[in-house]
Amino acid sequence: MGHADQAVLLIDRPSQVIDTVFEMLNEAELPAFRVVTRFSLGEALVALEERAYSVVIFRPGAEGVLAAVKDIACRHRCKPLVVLLDEDDSSLLFGALRSGASDLFPVASLHSQSEEFVELVSSALRQAQLLEDNQRYREELEQRLAELKDDQQAALKVQQNMLPPEQQVLAGMTVDYTLLPSLYLSGDFVDAIALDKHRVVFYLADVSGHGASSALVTVLLKNMTGRLLRNFRRGSSYDILSPLQFLKRINKELLEAALGKHLSIFAGIIDLDENRLTYAIGGQHPMPLLQSGEQIDFLKGRGMPVGLFEEPVFDERSIELPESFQLTLFSDGVLEVLPDHGMEAKEASLMSLVHRLQGGSAHDLQRALISGGVSMAPDDIAIMTISR
Image: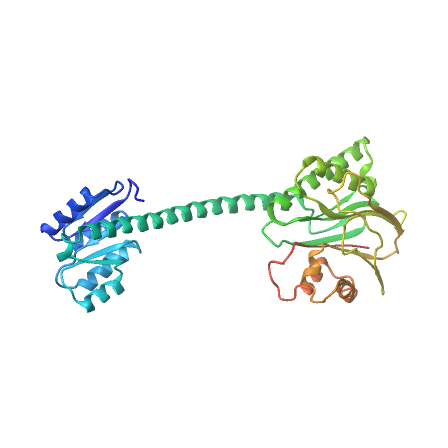
C-alpha cells in the first residue's frame, strides 16, 4: 500500500504522453502519492540527486536509451524504474532490463491497456514502500546498535574500574589475574583485598549466562564485598572473615534481587601468620590447583551454586599452606578451550599445564590455553593466581 509521502517522478520530453500518464495516475484509485514531472534527462538526474523518489517512470529519447536508463537506475538506487518504450525491439527490451529497468511498458498500449499500466505502477509503489520501510528499519536498527555499543562501552568502563589491578602485592603475596570475555562484557569476576598486613580475602566468580545481564550481577557482587569490608573495618560485622558466611550473604542478596541469575564461586581467605587457607565452594568447577615445588593437586570440596536455593549447602574447609606456594583459580570457560574429551582428561591436561608453567602468570596460562591468540572465547574465561 502506498503512503502519502510517496512520490513518483515522471520523466518525458514535452508531449501528449506525459499528460496521459499524469491523468491516468491521478484518476486511478491508488493510495495518495505525489507526481513530479521533469522534461529532460538532465533535469531528472538533478531531481534524483536532490531527493529520493519511490518510483520513476521514464520515457527515454530516441538516442542513447540504454545509457539514459543506466544513469537513472544508478541514482534511483534499486527502487522501481518503469521505462516507457516507443519501439517493440527485443534487443532494446533486454538491454533496458539489464541496464536497471524493473518494468517495461509500450507507449502505444497506454490507452488500450490502461488498467494493466495502473496496476504496474501500483505494484511498483508497493515494492518501493517495502524498500523504504526496510531502509527505515535498518537505519533505526543501526542507531539502536550504536546506542547499545555506547552503553556497553560505558558498562565496560564501569566493570573495569571495579576490578583490582591485574597484578598486585598484598600482604606479601603476588596476586594476578586475566579476564577474557566471550562477549563485550564479562560474567566472570575476580577480587582480592588485603584486610591487614597478613590476611587477604579473594574470590573468583562465574555468573550464569553471558554479556550485559551477567555483568550486572558482578556490580552487585562488588558492591556487597565493599559493604562487608566497611562493616569489618568499623567492627559492625565480621562476615568477610568467613568464606562460608560470605557465600550465604551473596545467596541471600541474589534471591532478593530476583534477577534470574546464579553464579559459581570460590572464595577464600589466606592468613600468613597461621600459614592457612580457609575457603568455601559454591558450585565452582574446576577446583583451584595448589602447587608447591613439584607437588600439585586440586583442592577438595564441593558446594551448590549461589543464588538458586533458599537453604544451600556450601562446603567450607581450612588447610595449612606450605612456605612457598601458588594457588591457581579458573572459571569453567577454560574447559571449553581444552581439546581433550571427558572431564577427567581436561582436568589432567589443566594440571599438566599449570605444573609445566610453574610460577607463570595468569596471562602466561591464558596464552598457553589459547595458543591461536584469539581475542574472544566460547565462554568467559577468568584465571587468577596467588603466590608466595
